[in-house]
Image (cartoon, rainbow, N blue to C red; front, top):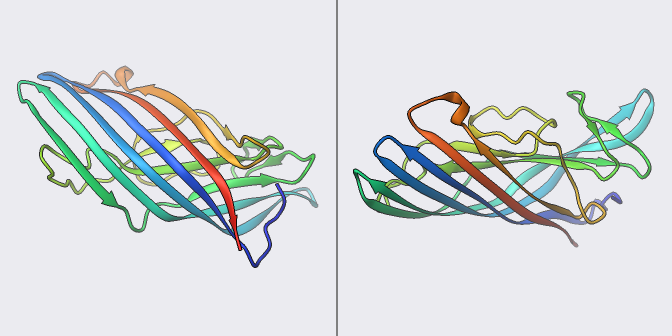
Length: 203
């Protein structure tokens, strides 16, 4: 990926979805959060192999995180809920950009291929709204990608894969499924996470 001019703004714009089936002792609770996402590329930290520059770690600052929630409770209690929210002060994401022909190793030791890699935090992904339109205060995160940094928050689902950029470094796209059934708790969550963001350069 070519380095952007200091006179341009580089954005990553797109959507994501967290779709979770919550299995409770008294019934089931499908919960879906749709995200509209926009991140701005901010400061770059050089990555070196010995003395050779091989790439950059790029901070992605959330310019817009908007959510739309829909869920249903079926069982002993039957109800539904919705909510829309514009999240301010959302958590940063991170991108590792490699120079042509190079592989980079991030600050925590993960090898990133020449295509580059990324990691995103989806805030308020689960349980942000109760029945009706009641807004809950909790901020439960779902993570896209791994190995670039360690998010410090209330993580509901963590990705196990390093996520590599597509389309010559201009697209973040993918999906994964996760279940916490192995925790053997009374409530089980089965997740499907999808996302698709494109790189845009603005003068």
